[in-house]
Length: 394
Image (cartoon, rainbow, N blue to C red; front, side):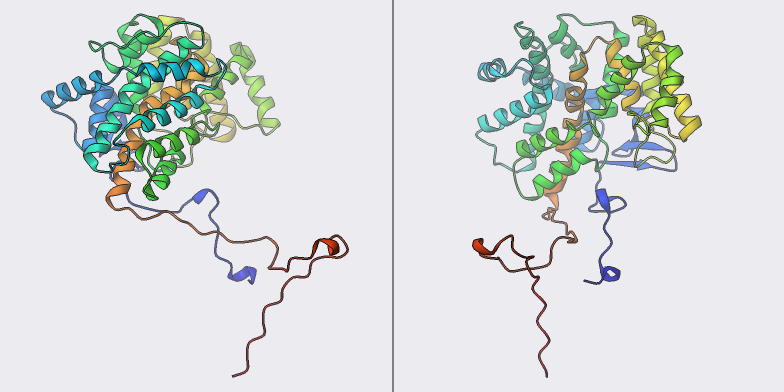
C-alpha cells in the first residue's frame, strides 16, 4: 500500500472516541472530574465512600434509608471464606500484592455458582461482594506475609475504619479516616483509563465480570497506571532531605528522566483531584509529622511547574499521604483497586447494556506475503516476496 494511502494510526488510542458513557466525565470548562454529574471535589467534601459506590452503580446518591440498606448488605459480605485464606497462605510471602488480588478475584469467581449470570441484578450483587471483600483480602495478605493471622472484619465499622482495623488492629484518628475515605472517592472512577478500557474490552466478548475485574487488576499493576503512586514514594525517599530536592530535580530533568506523579493525558489545567488530596495531606501531616515530606513535594511541584509547566496528578499527593498513614508502599495500588472496583464494575454493566465486541484494526509494516522455502534451501538466498497478480484483461 502506498504510504500516502495508509490510515492514520493513533498510538495509545490518543484522541479516539470508542464509545459513550454515563458514568463519569472530565468537564474541561470547570476542570472537574465528575461522577454521574457530580464534581469529585464536592463528593469528597460532602460524602463518604459508601455513598459514592452507591452513586456509581445506581446513578443517584442514596437517601438515608437506601444508604443504610446498602451499608448493611456490604458489611454482611466482608468475610472471606477459609478456603481463600488457605490460598493466600500458600502464596509466596514476597508475591506482589496485585498478583495476590488478581488470584483472589479469580478464586472468588471460580467459587461463584452464578458466575455466568450476566443480568444487571446479578452483576450488581457480584460488584458489592467484591467491594466488600477486597479490603479483607488486602488486609489479610498484609498480615499473612508477615506470619500473622488475619483480623476478621467487623460490621460495626465504616469501609475505611474496617480496613485500618483489619490491618493494624485499631481504628486511627478521625482525620486519618476522613483523608483515607477521600482517596477512595477520588480513585473510584476515571472514564476510559487503561484498566477500565481493559475491563470493558473483556466484557465486550461476553466474558464474566470476574474475568473483567481480573484483567483490570493486571492492567492497573503497571507502573504507568496504578503503580505510579509507589514510584512517587521512591522519589521522595531517594531525595531524603528538602535541601536536596531542587538539585535532584535538575539532574533528573537534565538526564530526561520521567518524573512520576506529574502530568496527565486528559487534563488541560491540572488534575482536579489534587487540591482535595493536598488538603488531606496537610491535615494528616499535622498529626503524623510530615513536614519534611511536604517540603520535598512542594519543591518538586514548584520546580516542575517552573521548568516544564507540568502539574502533579492524583498519585503525587496520595503517595505521601499513604506513607504518613503507615501503609506499606506495595499496598498503595491494591488500595486503588479497593476504590476502582466501583468504577470498573459500573463500566462492565454499562458495556453489557449496549454491547458490541471491541475489535480495532491495525496497519501492517512487516514483510510482504512470501512463499515458504523448503528447509534444505533456507539460508542460501533471500526469500522472494510474492508479487501481486496482474489484473486480467477485460
